Image 1 (cartoon, rainbow, N blue to C red):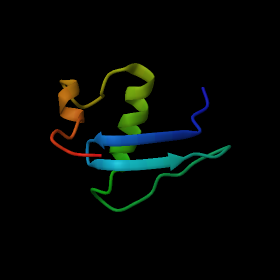
Image 2: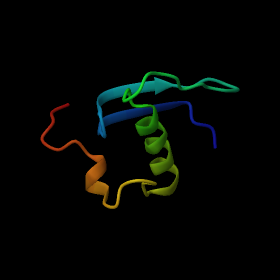
Image 3: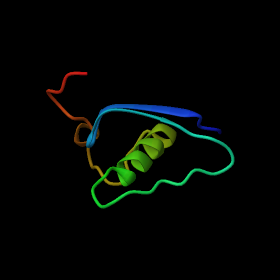
Image 4: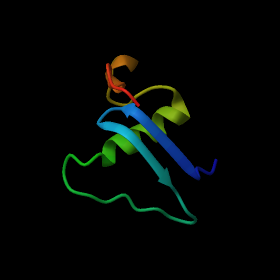
Length: 67
């Protein structure tokens, strides 16, 4: 599977985020608590329909957010 683009809306600490990926390799870098793991968790969730951290899917969603 090749992932070219992902859109995150109200997922973990992301309110609205779009990421474009390119071949052959993408590096995800940033400081602490900037959302690197959340982005990887979103990709994992997309592939497996389950979280590697959250017990319930509701933990992944930012409730009462607009956007």
